[in-house]
Image (cartoon, rainbow, N blue to C red; front, top):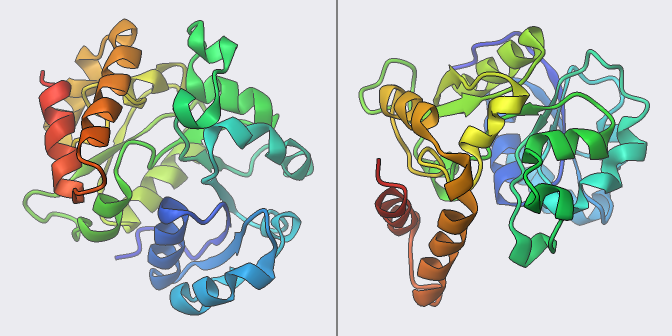
Length: 251
C-alpha cells in the first residue's frame, strides 16, 4: 500500500538494498530513477525488472522529491559533488553502515563520531537514516501490509521533521512499521552492533532495543557478528543471520 503521494525518487547505488527499494517503491506508484557509478547502460536489466528508469548519477538527483543513497559507507565522499546542487529541503535518506573490513578504518568514526554525522559531513547535505538496520533478504521478503500481525518495525532517525516524516512514510510503503528513532545524533542506536540492528523486531521490541543500546559495546558486537557469519562459509540464509544477531545482541 502506498502511504504517500506520488513522489519522484532518485536512488544512488543499486546493490541488494537499493535494488529492492527501487522495485518496491516503483511498484507502489512512485517515479523512480536509479544510478550507479558505472553508468545507466549497466542497469538495463535492473530497470526492466523494477520499472525504474536507469540514468546517470547526476540525472538521478535532478528534479526529485527524495534521494536515497545506498552505496558503501567508505565511498560517501564520492557523492558530495553530485549532492552539492540539491536543494537543502530535498530529503537525502542514507542506508549505509560502517564496516572497517570493507570500508577501511575511518579514524573519526573509530574514535566515536556517529556514523550518520560522518556521512552527512561527506555529503555536505542533511541526512535521514533509514533501512540501514535490516538485512537485504528481510527487506525483500518480509514486508507485510499495515496492521498485519508480526509486522517488522524499522527505525528512522533525523533532525528535519518533515524529511523524517517522508522517510517514515516510505518505510511503511516498503512493508514495515516505521518508528521515530530520534535525532541524527541518536542514530547510533541503529548502527551495527546494537540490539536493534538486523534482528527483525516488531515495534515494541525495537523501541526497547533502541532505548537500551550501549554505544561502547557496538564495535565489539559488530565484529563478533562478522566472525560468526564467516564461520558459516556462505552456507546460510537470512533467517540464520537474524538468529545469530539476536543471540549476540540479546537484551
